[in-house]
Image 1 (cartoon, rainbow, N blue to C red):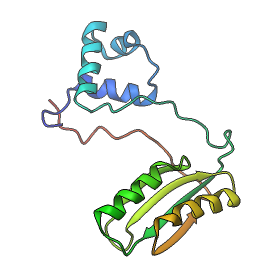
Image 2: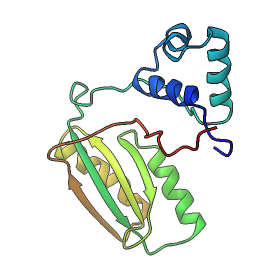
Image 3: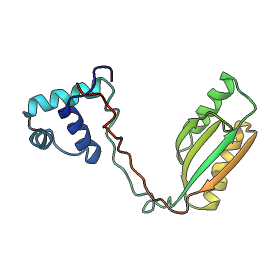
Amino acid sequence: MAGGLSRQDREILELLQGDATLSVGDIAERVGMSKSACWRRIHRLEEEGVICERVTLLNQQKLNLPLTVYISIRTNQHNDQWASRFSELAQGIAEILEVHRMSGDLDYLIKAVVTDMSGYDRLYKALIKADLFDVSSSFVMETMKQTTRLPLNHVMAK
């Protein structure tokens, strides 16, 4: 954000990252401003793209998706047409949560959730339709930290 964020903007963002269901009134009270001023700030942060979306985080264990897998992809096709097809394929697989194009030895890193090894096998078979050079997977045995909260201490003060 070019102009930086005020202290109150950062406080609003911290509160929303912790609980997006908070009312504007609750947020305004906690940051010491009027409800209308708080609503305008939240609306501005949305318009500027600082707030991308508000979501509900679900417990993957309770939804029968206990296995998290990171899939390393290497391809020998580095062209826009292949990348577009690969992106479309990945977008169509609900179990895939994240796809990142990487620097270094990997071309893509995928984070996915599956029910079990047979669920992973179905995912693998869907992925290899993209004509991949190499696929390597690592399964999460224990999650030691998981958050969606971004640190706000790196944003310049307004």
